Length: 497
Image (tube, rainbow, N blue to C red):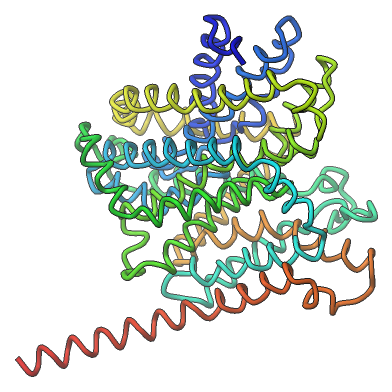
């Protein structure tokens, strides 16, 4: 553990965090790609030195995704999708500095909560996550899909159609269970299906660029210039006015992160949905309020600690990033699993400390870099749009080195443009693409394990998620009813006065 406090590991941690922020803020460049690029560099390092650099990339990348999401309306990483919903409207309102400060402090506090949970609750959390079978995973994903109702805006029908588009897009490619191509139409390039990143970049980034090209103000920057300054005490006061939102979102992030394969994108959207459901003014979400930014970013960075929990305690990677970290341990002759904390306690506690310190580096880099990031958005559109298009194309191509992914980017960019033009929400489509494969695989795996549908109801954890799904599905209707009652009551009071 003491090695973490030596100059070289601290420098690696700082540089890793800075690199992670850069990777996170570039649309199409994932945290997984950043950590994978660091892996070859760790061969000449000790295990703790290599892991501190990787942890820095993880923490920086999780926070960095908010930058392009808030400033440009394009999520830098899949786990920053929900941050766009309120972060970008606040930025367009002329408060980009405040939006980024809210996101940064929420990420920092959510990450610290995650770090404490990682240090003190690793064994029980890992044990709970281990109890999840395919029945529980399917019910959890189904619960996630019911969020479509909350993300549909004023038209539930359009939200459902958008979600179905995402679910259908996720079925293209090789069948995940039996390996037979589906909807390939005899084309070899279609057998790989639609990669998630080109779909995400197309729907959010490319469609956004097309809408900006359509505007007459061709020399304006993509983001309206606003107040570059912010007050950290004021931002912290705003955050601490809603401690339950912060704590709930952080714990959602930790819990989802501890579930192998669940990922930050689910935690980000799920925490945002719970913030909407728990708010007295749900109609204000999506207009640029602090509540949405706090919820999504606190959960986003809290995922990091959750991901590392099953990796260190059980040798079960919670995500692709933690799988790469696990590979780094194995390359250094260390076997992750239950015996890791017994055989290498200094290494495990060194990882805990590095994860904790990385959040302080992230906070300093993000807060002092906010002025630079906001100024970057003043680049003229005729320079910025081609630059972002190139980054989008490179990011899409770099995932699998397939030119087909460029066509996927263009296809879903055009689709996203048409959806926005006819007022179809984009978020449900992304949700369908993310959760569709997880729902299919776990449902079929459950039936292959035991051909009995009643197990979805009789297994307690699965049943609990199904009950939550039903509540989540009908709660928006209850909110609308409550809102109408409140408006009617206010109208009657005004008439009496």
